[in-house]
Image 1: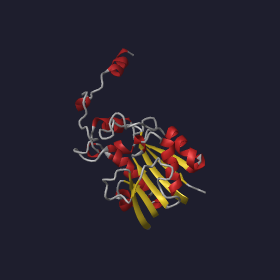
Image 2: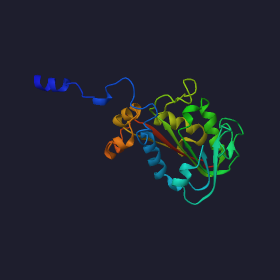
Image 3: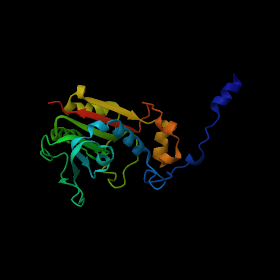
Image 4: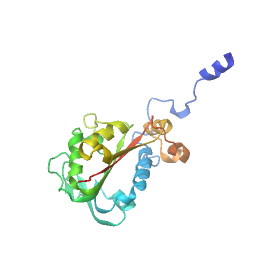
Length: 223
């Protein structure tokens, strides 16, 4: 019994993670692929059939180009007027920011954490979709504060419960599904600034709903 107790109390070996500063302040970009991008790609790949028809995406067309099929038109939304690649410059929270029923799919990745008026933004996204249109959104469950947004511009971290409830207000709970990606190792690695290339696929793919890194939401407009 005493030997078993000693084994239990043996200190964990943290190696290069026993530090108070991360390996990277840029989500590991200078080391390789950020961990959250692994899960975003995985989620959009699994829902690629939804990225079709008239597609709207935030900031650029990266995911529409990579995962879209049968895309008829591709628009880009950005509040920043300096983004010359954007076809729509608007604030997603504005009551008439986007054209109504104009899109079949809205790819909204890693954006809503920067929007304080969360329900207004989701309502705007809902308004922009036609009947049967799909919103594919991803949000952080774990992340450092974004340096560009700053301490006064990075508002939210999500769980499957909070994401489902937030989207259900506009789309209806029966039309919303939320999926958690990640585990405790992936979360620690992401916060430390390790890259995907420094982890094994089995370490990334193991899913533990108690330790999500990214939340993916699929919401469908039915009316």
